[in-house]
Length: 109
View 1 (tube, rainbow, N blue to C red):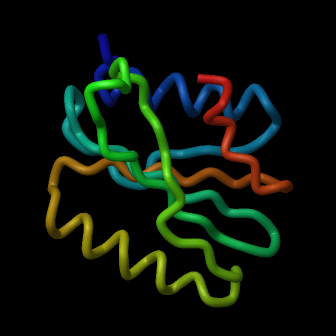
View 2: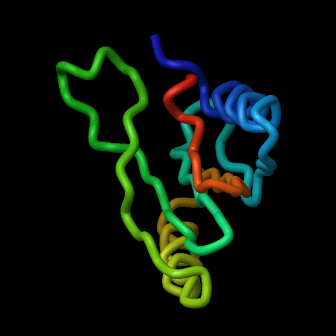
View 3: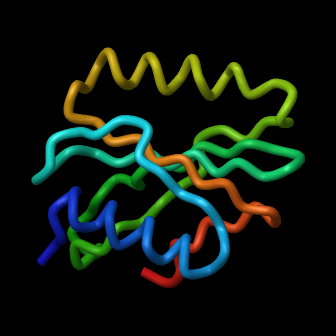
């Protein structure tokens, strides 16, 4: 069974903070089934992670793929993509993670 978005987001933020990084919700979406996008901010680059398409073999586990990775100077591309996704999906969650080494901490969940 898959966790609802709100509970998953709270758990993820806790995992990030326990590991000495900083995470926060930029946009709160629909609490039960809103899609979650994660922006990983490190000193030199910014990455946007999106949910991988689900298939029948996924066991409802959340899988992630990197959609965009840019130098921190050129992060506008990610902001444009997030705005586009937000306009398309009003139920969307956006979580920012600030990590010194660019780690996303998803392997822990």
